[in-house]
Length: 123
Image (tube, rainbow, N blue to C red; front, side):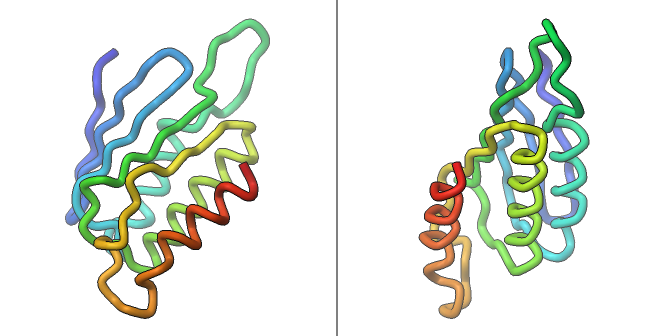
């Protein structure tokens, strides 16, 4: 399928659609400037609204954060909101390639481990 792209001031999102799965490749920063738009675009364009009988819908979303250079508290909130929205609609949301290099401040340097651990507990 065609790959839609969404650009914000500090973030570009590419959606790679496959049957029953979407991979969302993020490039840039998920910060207060882009967090709300990131959350809204993923929630509105990737997470299925319903799971109709006999209709193949997206049941897995992969958030590839390998090209994300910075995530702040608003960005973490947006990631959690997307994950929660997926859970509410029985859709698996998987975060991959979330590295410590995206977290600049020492206070959140280990948040990648905590975030992955939390998601694995609820998956």
